[in-house]
Image (cartoon, rainbow, N blue to C red; front, side):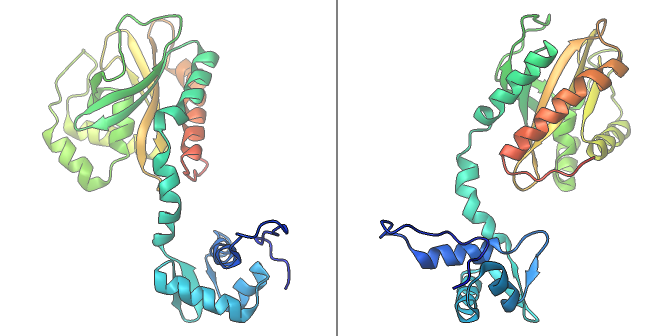
Length: 268
């Protein structure tokens, strides 16, 4: 038998090794972004398995719902995501994020936070404090209005359109400072912009004298499940300075957390 690129060579003492399972997985792994659709012959060539073996495996995988066949072209179905779900769902988001949050704080000298959306609020899941403490004391579990905070806007912008409409329908756009956006049409435009660029900076809309910045954390399905954020004194950082010096650190580490959760990110 030819040696395929996904084939694993077992040693003599691996008596419990199930070769049919190895072959089935090698067939699944033959599909990729470069080869989303394959014929039986192409799968055989990529895996190094014989055509009769590949045929049996593909027909079995088709019956189980992992592949589909159209016009003699085989392709994976979304059901294959179930194979990795148990692993991904067992990952604790805060545990995955912790070292990257520590890196953000180390590089910037400012507290880094991780938050998730709950109704109309952004809720802190974890925080890595800096030596320099902001005037407002925020802890894990603290809830902030999503519409007026950078992390909240990143989370709102990540919602599917129908869910966003439901949330916006119930939000009270209360002025919290002289800078707070209180017009729904304006907020919608802001969220559209956040969705396009992939980050947000808020200038004193939640608290006078405080500017904040956030970037999204995505799961394996590409959904925004959290926001990585930071707040800094407005007197210490101009908006341009935040975008040039701090935002790249937040965005890079949010992206790294997303990758650990299985997300495939496109360059912006």
